[in-house]
Length: 113
Length: 111
Image (tube, rainbow over all chains, first blue to last red; front, top):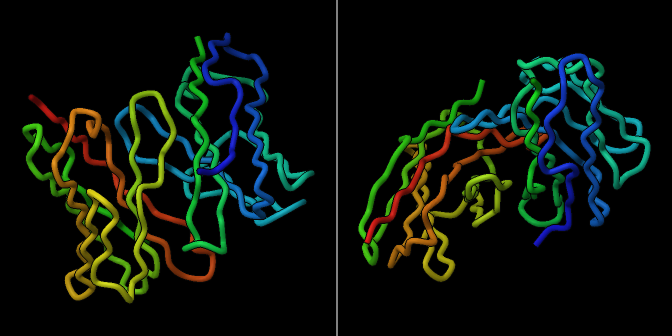
């Protein structure tokens, strides 16, 4: 089992608010990822990081931003939330020593009203 | 780009075997994965297989890989109601090994 944690699990916020979704892992993994998943749909990669001070945009364009100041922490921020940002956001990290497997957190469900 | 396809739904009776199929397009795929997602939760890694393997078995789970046809399957023996979930196939290749996921197959197990 992987130790990767996301907070908050569920959040309802108003339009225009700033929100940061937290993601932390205690395994020392260098590579971390953020995926966006609408209910019943596929996962879309929105951001990834190869390590400290490294951030890249994923396949799906997103208005969110990320930072990687510490290995264990990879927060995602929406400066001004909109209803179109309503989705589940999944954080993951990669174990490069075991099949390059990606381990996921429990997800953060964001609803913007 | 890479593409991973899965059927969207599978319904089985409790106790029967379930077979979830997946096809992918990237011939250089190195790692292939199966994940399980229960409602409201993240993805749980079930198993993975290297591209140089044909089969991998882990308790009730059997993964079969046909590289020629780019076809991956997950067989769940003695399917239980607790196996009801969405199952995602994923492949990773190239230097970055960033997985590409399918849309997921919703497995419904009925008594």
